[in-house]
Image (cartoon, rainbow, N blue to C red; front, side, top):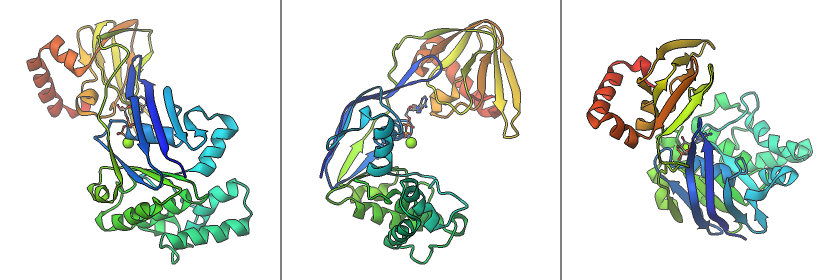
Length: 333
Ligand SMILES: Nc1ncnc2c1ncn2[C@@H]1O[C@H](COP(=O)(O)OP(=O)(O)O)[C@@H](O)[C@H]1O
Ligand SMILES: [Mg+2]
C-alpha cells in the first residue's frame, strides 16, 4: 500500500543540437488506491511522464518513489523486474501481437516470466473473463473491435497483478460506444494496493478521476537565445517525424530538404541557401517535422524559437509565410 511520489522530475531531450525539457522540476503524488488523470495539450509531456513511470525512460534528474522502489534509479535486472512485475502499461494503439489469440496475448508476459503454459493459460482466461471477454478467448486482434482489443491489452497489463497501472490515451483509438467499458475497468482497477495513472484528452474520464493533474506545455531550453549550429556536409539537422521547436535561418552554406517516402526512397524537395528559412510548421503548430533537413555543404544555421523568429523576421513576414505554406503544402516542414 504505497503512494506514488514524483519529486522534482526533469526530462531533457536532445532535439538536433538543442535541448527540449518537457518536464522541469515536476512533482506530484498519486495516493494509493486512486485514479489520476494527466490532462494537457499535445506536447506537454504526458507520454514522457508515463514513460518514466513505466521504466521505459530514465529521467535526467529527480525521483519516482513507490514504496521502497526508486524507479528513476533502477538499472539492469532490477529495472527488468520492475517492468515485468510492478507496472502494467496500456497503450493507445493496444500493441497486441496480431498472430496470437486473446489468450495468447495475455499469456505472453506470464510465459516470459517463466510461468508454465498451463498456469499461464488459466490465469489469462481468468483475466479475460474479468475484462468481459470470456466469449472472445480464441479471437485474434483482427477479429475483435477496438474496445475489445483494448480490454485484451488491459488484461495483459494486469497479468502480474502489478500495483502500478499506466495508460497512455487508452481511449483515443476507440469509437464512442467502445470507450465506456474501458473507462469502467480503469476506474475499478484503482483500489487499495494500486495506483492508476492515465493520460487522456477524453473528458469522460474526468468525473471518474480521484485526481486531475494538469500539465502545461514547456519549451524550456538550455539557452533561450537563438542558437547557431555549424554543420558538416551531409550532417542531419533534424529528421522527418522528429519534434522540435526551432525555426532555422541559413547563414552560410546550403540545406537539402528531403522527404522520406513510404517507398523507402528519399525525395529531394528543395535546396535552400543563405538567408532562407525552414522548419517553421513544426514549432508553430506542434507538428512533427514533415521532412529531413541536412547540410549540403559546410553550413551555418541559426535556430530561433517562434517568438524570436517573429522578432527577427517581423510579424508580418511570418503571416505571409504561413499563407504561403497553406498554398504550398508540399514544402511544409
Ligand atoms: N524522443 C524525443 N526527442 C526529442 N523531443 C521529444 C522526444 N519525445 C518527446 N519530445 C518532445 O517533448 C515534448 C513532450 O512530448 P510528449 O511527452 O510526447 O507530450 P504529450 O504526450 O503530452 O503529447 C514535446 O515537445 C515533444 O516534441
Ligand atoms: Mg502523448
